[in-house]
Length: 499
Image (cartoon, rainbow, N blue to C red; front, side):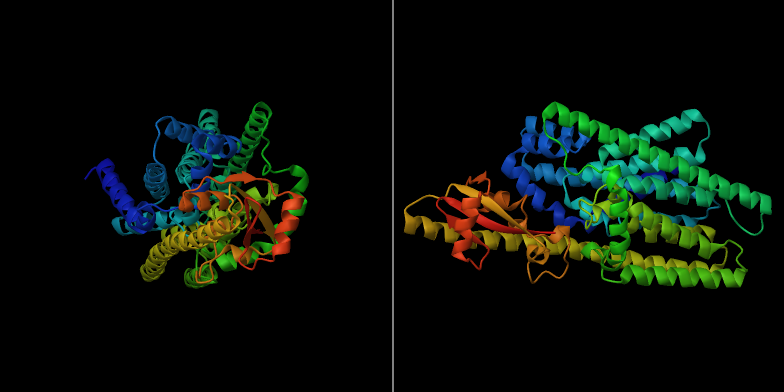
């Protein structure tokens, strides 16, 4: 069978598996942002969120949907399907690039394909698929993988220029995954430029130097992409008069770094609620122990333990690159995609560097266990989000009954809604009977950007969002409502709980 035909069949199989994993959301689901989109409309959302954030591609997609009067269901499901298709392409490209940098056989190709799948479709990626922006998030990964291939496997200024252009496209598509370019380049270069005992010392030095050069080029490409994106954001802000408040600042880097150092272990432990607590640590420990035993047996022939540690360190650093500029969305999976991809890359390195049959079976077993856990985890997390949608509808119905009772009693129609944002009580953003606390299980009724949308959607009302004035807040606080909402004059005041 020709390689192109084989890749097409693999691509089709990957796409089908991805559909099965995300079937809970392909039957329609409502992210907190989806309620916001329905409330403000496509054009306003495209302008105030996508365009203002410098995401030009998503802006165009949303504006096209607006012009074509695409329903919200087609918009949400269509962007998710598009993201799954592009992500399947990412897996194929990742697999092919890895295999061309080493000796390959059928068993190794199967294992690398599986590992590549879960490198892309990792637990952090679940949050990416939650948003309509999933399609551009996936596009950014594809651009970064191609860029990394040009950096590592193609010499010359022309190819480096293509790599830079692809990096810029990737950042413009979605800034939050910029660190992925660095880690994927590092892994490609690590597998191509062999560092092993059977080579001469001079050859080892040359290969290490080349790995560092590739890593540096990837970092420069990512940095240029981020700078250009920030420039675009500022230009758009000047033109539209809407300045982005989440743009990073060089002045905050050291302060943000201190915060990252103080809090990064909690993210590795809890995995933003997208993966069972401590399970990432367990897998990493097993991988490192196996690597160490392998090195002892082979007398550090491939320096496997050092390579695994370096992949882990680079992945963690890349997972927090964006947070150096801004701590906005720090506790979200979409900004830490590189950390989610870490296990996949570590397993890829184990498979590609291994030359022992017994260890091949051990590494294959670890990969299979990780694969089944990842599939099950994805299904559970997406299912819990669907449960949240049901609970949201139920809570809004309770609010609607409260409004109707007020209107009947006061003989006055409720026309407005005001959001009272309370910080430091983020736990109240979740329903008590939901086990996973993550972005995908937010209660939209208690999110300040989504509350008006979810209430209007389920009540079929058109409450106008108004500012919470001092007088309005004072009157609301006098009511001492334990349910987290109340009505002052003709305005529904609802409490939202954020970090």
